Image (cartoon, one colour):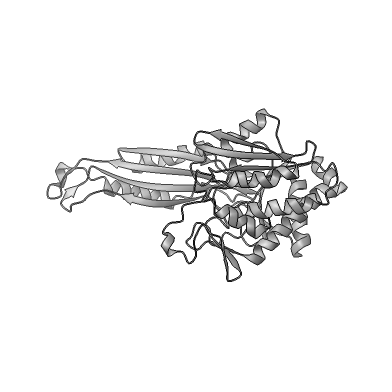
Length: 382
């Protein structure tokens, strides 16, 4: 099955999170004849997938997810979101960029690499979940201790998340993520008698202004963008115009760099709210800590492979949203390299055929450089 046919088959699985659809069976049918041992591991309502070929070093693990976000209004799509239509020199469908296309490119690159791979060449594995687009509680977060218990620890994880223009950047880290809900409490009353009520809205507005305006970082952070807080909603749920409400709430999200830990950032936000919100409740959730891969041999190997295909070295980046790399970094270095992220989660998600061909070539070249070059292998293993 070629790359395009595999993407179309994966898209047709309708693997809307947290369901993998039939995608694991499809991948297993391809990987088992290549010699991979394949295992499906279930935690809660999520099924995960692990396949490995070989038992020696070096060991590269391709990680990612088969689940996709819902398509939204299917009638608004130019083409069926679960068909994988080829049109305008692109393939269209939910998940073609995020990240079924990346999976298909790596599978195809693996097939081509193994035709000429030395024997033994090391180990190669796939680690996939159907819980990346959801809460991410029963996916790779649970698979990390599962792998650790079995001694399945690779030298590096290559995550196929969409990262940007193909060949132009790799992600070597991510900011941490925290979300919060601030609810200011007051006393309901008639607007004609404000002295008998306590309006929480002005206090909420003042506190939100403080949250927006107070700089989170006290210095630049090498390799990372500044930490950033964004208000995502302000709600009063007041259906009439002559009542002072009893509560008012705001929700926000923070992306933070390694100047902070989640716990210290929680303390900072709590202190700000204590100073400005009056009677309130603050609920904070840490979704992931920031991380940075500093394993030079693996980074240089990936950059070298990409440069040999495109003619220029990709830049190293830590921007964007969170990924499952925040869990995988507990076991091994994490490098993210995938397709363009221009249309992910949108109506009419699509990827150009040229980008797919280039991505597959980059992956195949990377595999050859990791497993076929004695010098590179020596550097990685050292």
